[in-house]
Each structure stands twice: as C-alpha cells, then as structure tokens.
Image 1 (cartoon, helix red, strand yellow):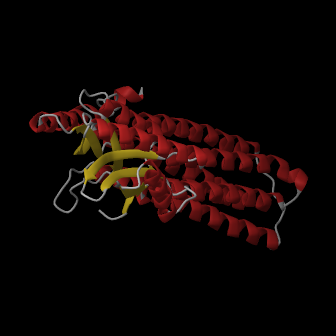
Image 2 (image 1 turned 45 degrees about the vertical axis):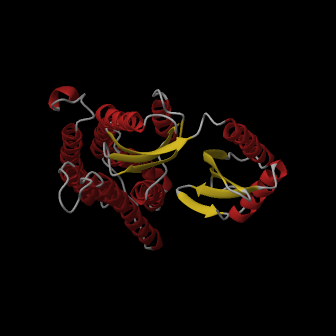
Image 3 (image 1 turned 30 degrees about the vertical axis):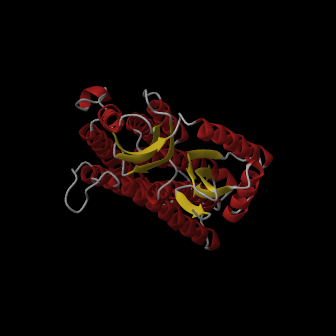
Length: 396
C-alpha cells in the first residue's frame, strides 16, 4: 500500500524519493499522535491518572518530533547552494538528534512527575472497563506506526525514521505498562500509578540517551561501515593497471552524499597519459554507478627494477614480522629507494591504528634497525599513517 502512496517508491537512490518517504512518515505520525494525545488526555483527566496524562503528553511530544521529521526531510532535499556546497542532507541527522533530545527530556519530566506523586499523598483509583479497552486499543495504533517507520527507515536507510520507530516502540511499552497499571491498581494500592510512571520514564530516558549518542556520532563523523569500505577497495583493485591502493578516506555529508579520496599505485614505467585516463575513468565510474564523488591520487611505483623489487619484498616480510610479533595489523605502501653516493634512502609508508602498542618513534627505530641489518648503508625515511594522521620520520 505504501508503494502506491509514494511516487517512485522503489527508486531509493533518488533524493526526491527519500524526501517523499520521510515526509509521508512524518505526516502519518503527526496525525496518529495527535489523535492518541486527545484520547489519552481525556481519560487521564477523567480518572485523575498521572500515568495516563504522562502517556498522552508523550504522544504530544511525538507529534512535535514528527513535525521535526517533516521539516528535516524538506530541508535535506534542498539542492546545494553557495553557502552549502555539499548540500543539505545532514539536516536529516539534525532532525534525528532533536527527536532524540525530546525523547530524553520527556522521560526526565515523566520521572520527576512520578516521583512527586509517590512522595505526595496518592489516592486509590479505579478505572472503567471502557477506559482500559480504549487505552489498550491505542497500543495497536502505535505498533502500526512503529512497523511503518521501521520499514520506511530500512528502505531508505534513515537514522531519523529508525529513531522515530524506536520512539514508537517505547510508546507501546509505556502504554502497555499504563494498561497493566489500570488493571492491577485496585488490588495493589494507590502507589502503583507512580511506580509504573517511574519505570516507564527510566526506560524512555535510556532509549533517548542511546538515540542521542547514535545521532551525535553521525554528525561528529563516525567511521564508515566496514563492508562499504571493503566494497570500494575491492572495486578499485578490480581495474586493470591498479597495483594497489591505500589512504582511503570517506566522508559522508548525508544520505547519497558520499565523498572519498584514495591513493592508487600504478606502474612508474607506464605511459603517464594512459594512467591518468585510467584514474579519470575510475572516478567517473564511481560517480555514475555508486554515487560516490571519488578523487584519486596516483602513486607511481617501480616494478621493473630488480634491486627495488628485492628490497621491497624484504621490507614487506619485515613489516609482516612486526605485525605478527605485536599482534596488530601493519601494512606497507608507497615503497621506493633513492640511491646516493654515501647511502641509499629507503622510503615507504606504514599504516597502523591508534591501538598499536608502539609509539611512532619506537616503531621507526624498530624498522630502521632491521633495515640496517640488511645493509648498513640503508637509511629509512618512514611515514606513519594513524587513522588519517600522517607523520614522517628520518632524514633524506
């Protein structure tokens, strides 16, 4: 049914479809939550139940979250302009963060209200069967809304819709707890309403904090998905003439707004114009078929000089030995040698992560000593890459 209501629903790569899906989910949520708010508020005031009133306010805040979703997707769909050359797609992430903050704040307000009721002088309450049935029926509405948001969020890989779906699930749990409280309060006493309110509030706050952290990580700049990175590496290496790649950096400016840079190793003896044409073709292919704005830096390496190849292999084995000794992945790239009258400079890069136990100086000394064991006239010039940070050691 959703496919019929949203134009070009299955064309997920189209930014306009993403906006349509997000706005559709937002408008459905606004309508559903305002209806639920009105119903619960009436019954909450009628029976003087703090948990029902709190649950109604939860739905009211949800409608505000849905408004943020609509606004967020509307702005995220705007094209790039002079002030925002990378587009406005990250507005979707901001909407997700705002929704998460609202969820957390709601839980805190509900917690303080429930505690106040427990510390006061609560009176016993009784609920009409009709009220219990009506409240229970509202759970079905939130389940439908949650399923819709999960489905749409998965369809366009939207953190905002997934956050809204989780919020709806928390509503289902909250309202279920309220219904249980309505049923058992006549048997358990007047404090039941406040206790249930505290339990619901704590759950909502926990979910809200988790959503804030997830949304913040995206805005701050979390590491790209490992499978996505591996697919990019695999595809670049599949082109004939590519000998290796390194220093891949991926930036996301929102859904379908991916920018990447990479160093590609090629044969130094090859025709420069052919190699440049290959880089252009790879970049164009990624933009057309993957939607990734890729920029490639060519790294020519010698593959025909016997002395260079022999020393490269020895250095690879040396780096591999260090990787095994310290149980940490260490890779080597950009290898070359520069021969001089008194010594030969051996230049290459190694890639490690911040978890590596050796400092940069210690690693450089370790490699330098091992290279001099091969030949005392070899001087190491090392560049260490630590998660997008590079530093050169040694003297040329």
